Length: 161
Image (tube, rainbow, N blue to C red):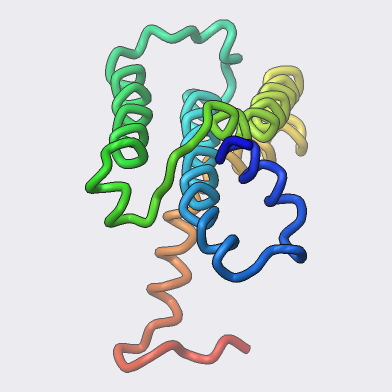
């Protein structure tokens, strides 16, 4: 039985594995998780290119965005498949199917954003359209920074009551 088939079968029967067997498949599992996160990040940057215009109309004419997507995928492959670096990061061999793990979430994200953009285009002045457009403009980083600034007193976190 090849190692890949053994890993695939053993993932579903974790409770039947010894500690040594689990530690053997841990690097491959970590690499697969990392690959899935990278795929979803690529999908996220693609669908969040515009607030209102559909991805189909917008196209892929932005050279810098296309280059950054390529660079992210190349860096992920470099980190996973370079022997010295993958050993330092506790990564293991990743089968090609592991890169497909994030595709269902990417499809869900694409459909959700296209429906949101459709509502914003159909009803731009309604409550739904304005809230969905505001929802998009609130980035996670700015929300985090505003919470952080308001709750930091210099010595520690203020109690949120």
